[in-house]
Length: 180
Image (cartoon, rainbow, N blue to C red; front, side, top):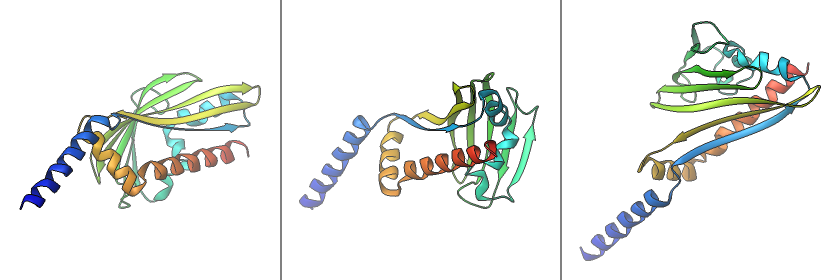
C-alpha cells in the first residue's frame, strides 16, 4: 500500500511539473519558394475553393462533402467539410482577415472526431520579380492542463511531425500547380 501511494505521488508530481513547464503556445510553420510572381500566388491561395487542389488534408478524401458560404476570397467566407475519414472528419475554416497580396488569416473549427479551434495563416513574400516565398502556419494557446496533454500526445503519436509533413506536401503540390 505504501509503495502504491509513493508511485501515485510521483506520478501526480510529474503531471504537475508537466503542466507548469510544458509550453502553452503551439505554433507550426512551413515555407516554400514558388517561381511565380506574388500576385499570381496570392490569387491562388486567397480562394479557399482552390485549396482542395493542393491542401494535403482535403486531398485525403476527394469524396468529402464540401459546402461554401459567402463570397470566396473575402472576409467571412466559410468552407466546410464532412468526411468519413477520421484524419479529415468534420469541420470548417473561415477567412478572418485578408491583407491583399500578403496575408490570409483563417480560423479552423473542428467538430469531429474532436472539437477544437486553431488559427491558421498563409503569408506571401516577394523574393524577386518571379519568386515568392509562401509560408503556411497555425497556432493556438493551450490552457493548463491541455498543454501537458498536448505534449504527451505529441511525444507518443508524433502529431506535430504528421502535421508538418502534411503542410510540406500541400506546399509542394501548390508549387507544382503554380509552376506548370
